[in-house]
Length: 335
Image 1: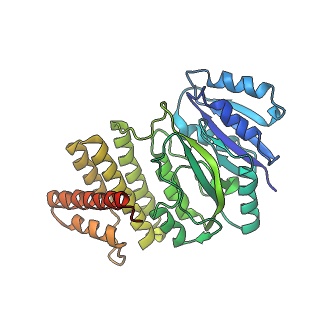
Image 2: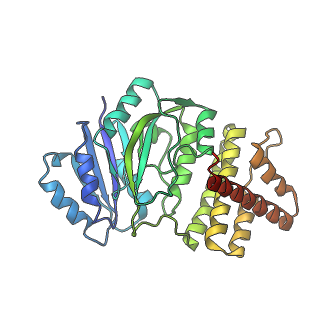
Image 3: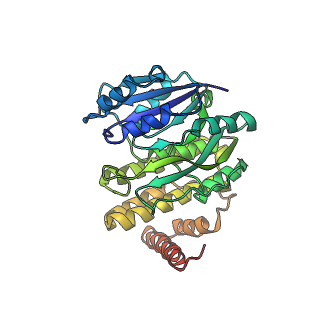
């Protein structure tokens, strides 16, 4: 059994950090190191953490790294990766917590199944509208099965609750893009194209806490601009790696774009933003005449051949029609 580095960025979580640390230091798995990365939190998060750690029997497994200035969650996670000495890396947000056997179960899955990624379900505390984990437990996915499961949103893009080998992260340069939000989308998209195999263990081992301080659901111009950046970075990644330009991968890319447009249209209510985003979506398409996308994405991509104005209305109209059909199915209880 290998050592696990649990990386926890810390920022503005003074009301939640104790519960997080209780769950981590209460793990049944013994060989862990806990890396707290203080991202210059303006509240008492680090003081509260130190108060709790100082009297805990496992205090020696905890290290606190201090950033010189606030640089965001991506940079903090990268700092944790570079400082990690474990065989495995596990990401945990500092306002969430995990079940006592989480690390033990994930390590067991990694070491008995020769997989690159172990993942499990999660429960949401404080909001029942959050998307649920739908990946079949116990199944080992490989190749396009991994891409297609992410396409169907069966597992989440957030990096938490995923166990990876540290050498795999470093070998594949799986660091987080700093300076942006929605870096999770970019990181998980690339991750899905890198891993050979993955497995979901049974049960919910992670508890995602929704609270007033969380930014989930809010869409600002920064969110908008960072979504544009993610689209551009994924396009650059796929252009630089033409071997990845398969039906499954390109359809997943188009699905990400579609979800971005739906989110921006529904939450920003700004036609100028809609049009700008469409231009970015259209300009960052990967053209492969020998590859046909999945039906929905293929129909959406037909609009790229239309004049830009008509293409925009084709794209937005199709997305909103799909969204309304989805909401109707939910209302009627149709799976």
